[in-house]
Picture (cartoon, rainbow, N blue to C red):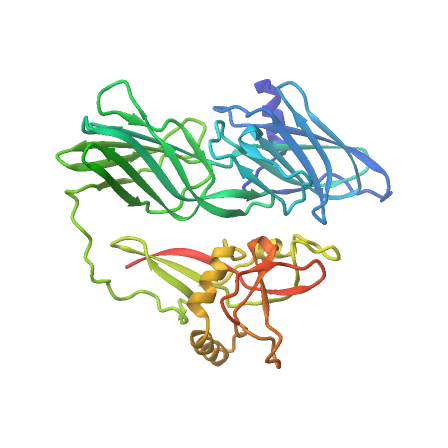
Length: 436
């Protein structure tokens, strides 16, 4: 793409981060179709990852157009009826599996050994009479991770890394799903004691990431683990350089790739010479089932010596929400509610994943749920229900897994597939990191 052309196009750009809505015109004839031309671009320091695919989703999440471009030099053009549309563009699609029947609520699945960085751009447009143009700024959807180790003993015969827990799926609507553990075997470098992973592309992680190094030596196997200070983020490169000496593995974080995000630095060490953390848990952790800073505490775990991972449960409860499989109502309604939910200025809430739904059952089930609801009622807040109000037999069902499944707090039964006609209750969760 020529640079001068993009300087002009930049005035009309729709950024993924804000997904700005651009109303190009008002259409009087609601049945007349107009032409939509879509332009995609990357930053000046980067390049688009071909092949590209562009989708046009209507207000109900239905796909009204899909086109693929294998190389540079062409634009995407759709003929669309009047109305509002979400335009989603993906670059580097050779690294993922796309849904065969896409909807806005559909997910893509990142391949285990993705070789190119996946990019995404989005914009909302309102089709009017005549032509409309949409300019999409492409952003990296993945993190880039490189691990480089030096000075390892000569008797090390194999090194592998395990990264937990990057999402394996990503919804077009912008939500991660199905966290997994990513495993990769490192290769020996040119110098003795060098082992490298090369560039690894993963989706953002669910909560703080954990890196585990597994070394196979002549004397046996040994592992070292480190919990990162925060979750891996989209568009951020992580370069981990580790050096092994006198029995200690010291890994220094240095994160910088041109065209990606700003530099982030983490320093940490691990190995047989690293002191063990104090086994006595410090006091002061937010109490499960309580209101902490006016938020409901659903689950607390220890991240490291200085931080807690705290899951919050929304005070507000939505009722009569259609599932993502609904055939009568907007299947993206639950995701839209999650995207817009703000509690005392705190945003970034999500529909519980399947694992988080089971965590809620275990952490707040039984007597803990009774105690929680007494507290909520006393505070004038809606209870978190196991059975529907005024019923001892009808279980209250809450949506999870991006609205595709539902679960009940009346027992620890696994979440099940949501119905196409039934309406559900909905509460949101959010993980935060709290200093001890």
